[in-house]
Structure formats: C-alpha cells, structure tokens
Amino acid sequence: MGFVATEEEVSFYRENGFVEIDNVISQDELEELRMALEEVMAKPPAQSVQTSESKDLYYRVLNQRVNTWRDHGIMAKYALHERFAKLARQLTGASGIRLFHDHALLKMPGDSKPTPWHQDLPYWPMDVPEGPVWSGPLSIWLALDDVDERNGCMMFVPTSHTIGKLTGISLVEPQDIFDYAKGSEAAERKPVIVRMKAGSCTFHNGLTFHYAHSNTTDKPRRVLAVIYMPDGTIYTGVRHVVTDDKGLVAGQPFAGGLFPKLA
Ligand code: SIN
Ligand code: NI
Image 1 (cartoon, rainbow, N blue to C red):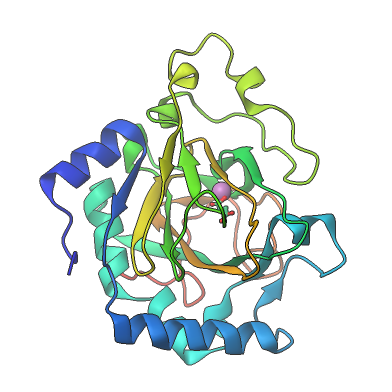
Image 2 (image 1 turned 120 degrees about the vertical axis):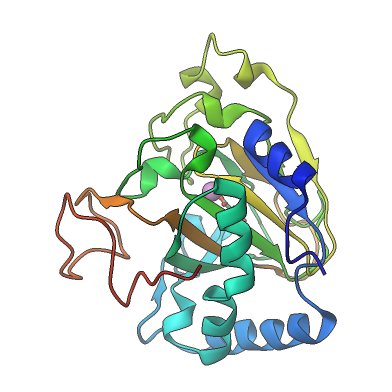
C-alpha cells in the first residue's frame, strides 16, 4: 500500500505539479467508499452543498457535492483520513495539513462535457504562506472507478504550477487558459493523460493546469476529491460556498472544527 510517497514521487510532484500514487486504498475500503458515496448522493444535502442541479449546464460537466463528510460518517472517514493528509504533508513539506473541503465529483453519462482546462487556486479564498510553489494548497483526486479518456480521466500540464495564479475561468463557458499563459514555456508542455485503476489517486497543486475528459460511457465516473491546505494558510474573505457565513475572519489563518488539522 502506498501510504508513504517515495522520493521519486515527491520530486516528481514538486517538479511537475502533480503525481500519480497507486493503490492508496484497499479493495474493501474502495467498496465501503463507493457505497457511502452512492448513499450520500442519493439523499438531499443536510450540511453538505450540492453545487450543480441536474438541469444545469454545470451538471453536464460535474455532478458535484461539497463537504460530504458533514453528512455521512464514512465519507468523513475518508475525507479526514490521516493517510491521505500525510501524503499531502509529505508532498508539500508542510508542518501541518488542514482540510479545506471534500467534494464528490461525478461525471454523469449522457451529454457529458469535459471539465475545461483550469487552475483551482483562483477559486479558493486563500492567501498561501510564503514558500516554494509546490508547498501550496493541493487536491487529492481519488478514483473510485477505473478511469481513462472514455469516462473522464484527468490530464495535467507538467510544470504549469510555476506559471502563477491566473484568472479563475468559468467551467461552463470556459475561456482559454492557455491564452492567459502566452509566452510561458511551461504552458507549451505536452499534457500528460493519467489513466488509473480504481483505488489509485493523483495529487495536484492548486496552480497546476488540469482538464478531465467527458464521460462517453453509460456509467457515472465516481471520484472523491479532497482539498488540503498547509497549516498557516490565511482566509482572504473572498466569497466561497464553504467559508461564507462561517464566522471566519479575513486576514486570519484557517482554524477550527470545520477546517481541522489532519496531519
Ligand atoms: C473532474 O473531476 O472532472 C475535475 C476535477 C478538478 O477539476 O480538480
Ligand atoms: Ni480543478
């Protein structure tokens, strides 16, 4: 089981802004997590937030539920799991890792749209602590189904995390992020397609350019993604579904029970 990243994985992550780590959960855990995901998605949200409605254009890109850990104990088990947070700590070299939020990311069959090229950090209300670019906030993207180009596997542009923070783009009416990155050598790099078996994952830095293919199969593509931030990350006060009206103070570091330190 890949509970500790190898030196190669850590340096690959730091250099390229993403890394694949295989078999981070067992078959039993995979079954448990799949069942919990089905259960949580079948019920109306309580504390979690459904950010796409089934008639939305957004839903054609992603059927997305944010903070499933707050509605289901098994989702909490995995969203808060020390194993993944420790991997995030190792990759970033952070002294501690906090949860920002989880999200169930289902790419639904039938008129499915790709997730357009984007960076994640522009959407997050975070000021990142000083440090090398690879030490910043990141996501785990844990495949609960085998993924390839037919059902929504991801692509990453190697080294694109060095380009800097660009404008956040719309996922339904996307602007071309490569236009914003003109003149950057990193943006010219050939994207890497990451096909994976269920139970394997990628980590990607919040600045890495990434994309997911549409789902042309007849089954949903199921993923649990969790966003982690290095301890000391500052809340900016910019509006976000996870932080609005939670009593956070702009300019102060993320803290408290909704953003727990996991490793
Ligand atoms: C996806 O799963 O389709 C996109 C995930 C991401 O943007 O991080
Ligand atoms: Ni993203």
